[in-house]
Length: 250
Length: 189
Image (spheres, rainbow over the protein chains, first blue to last red):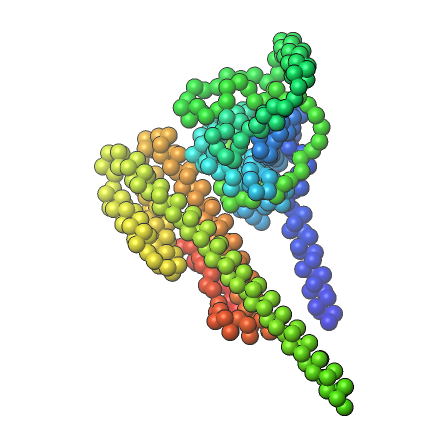
């Protein structure tokens, strides 16, 4: 009996140890390797929170650390992070994890069942080679992450032909009376003027994109830099993953 | 006396009722577990099919490279037809493993063709192949987990009685070519 108890205790300890190695993520962007400036991190947080609202709940999570737990393969590890944190909405399975281990010089995209058609491996490979690898090689991790997230966000926002990432329909406001519509229009105008003035003073994140047939699915304009703020961390929705994605070294 | 007999009959009847409830519950849960194994297997086959679907495109891309080894291409095309003709899990696994080794050989040969390796078309195919490889291993792992649960369940007493009545026996695990040598030997015998 005593032996059984000791065995059970050891089992419990080992279970706790192995699960402790998988990080629990509380915000859209987590950087444990000091690869991002605070401004870039909050930019990412805002933009990714907006992405979830603008789509049918796509959860795009960025996680950067120095080294990954070598008791797993990189692919096993990122799959465990995605599953433990329940990234993506249940039923839509639209979670995305962009992972990088700076010291190990590896990165991986892990995408849920619902987005693996839109973000297929060929596309992710291309984004990685065009935006992640060259910047990471120059140790400009921030630019690599921002560029990759921006192009991916724009592709997702424009993927409304796909059932998976559909923009929220606007006819929910169809029954509102005229006055409210006018108020909204006035508000939008005020906002537009405000934002235009703001962006003149503070250019923020800016970038021009390659003109390439592979990226023709991307929405025009910037994805990053238009976040309206707001608060709240990330909380998982229970999306499922099937090991789809792309991994590479830099 | 009569009163005692009625109580006795009542107890016996109650016990039989409980037994029936238990039997039905166990029966249903075994059916569910068995279906779970089937479902997981279907997922594995879907991923295999995806990989096989990439082959014609791959062969066409590689053909373009000057005097690319013909034998490698024939091997891979044959492996693909073999997979398509295969019926039943056992034959499918075998054919899929042949596809895997033919693909591995092809990718080794491609190393000698740097220009081919650098084309966007080939890179895209390579990315997709690597991705299906990973998805296959994930789905295979989940299938094996489902088999482990099922096999353990049908052997425990008293569930094994119900399993015996349905005619359920061990479902088989399966290993890939690359794992076959160093896979953990899981056995419940």
